[in-house]
Image (tube, rainbow, N blue to C red; front, side, top):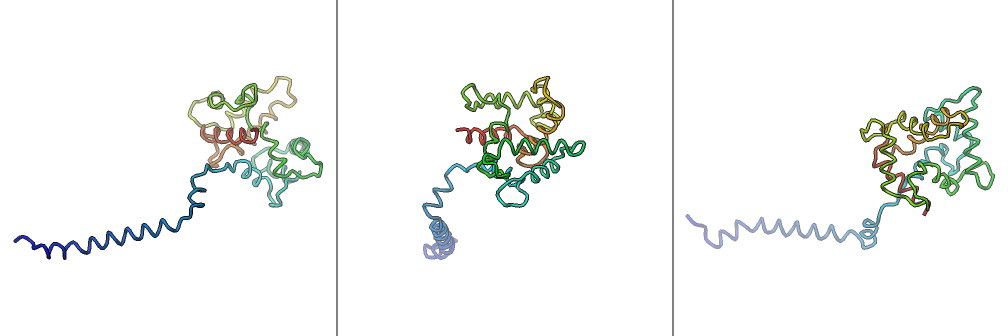
Length: 211
């Protein structure tokens, strides 16, 4: 038997009320987001690449890196200390000499940004120092010996060995140290290898500091 008009209205009323209630909730939810919050959410996210790396080395959290913290970081990434700790001492001395601009035996975040030009292979930049995406891609491909899209430490070390001048003092040690520090810096998801996307993100961060 067909429903009367009154019965149809009675049957559909709860559904209408529920829809209206849901709409009110949605409207209320939207009102909790301010214009400033919405605008901030639409802004490009600032890279934390250098800040994250700095924090890993700054083990005591005093916002400055000392010589002992450099040596501790070398140990954490698997760099052998060498006879009488000579490798660790040499790397730490070089790090402090290049980055401790004011000579206070501490490297601040502002000084640490100076590592940008040395963190990535120089051949990802053109003659004017500008980052070129095609150079980033080709450099990653040339480093990725087996072509699996993942740059391992061994591949990184081999690529660095080929790029270092033949007369480089302790060439194999330099390549070993640089590859271990490089993988630690560039492996953003901490899975032990560097994907092409991570390589590109790091290159963008470096380019941002150079600009």
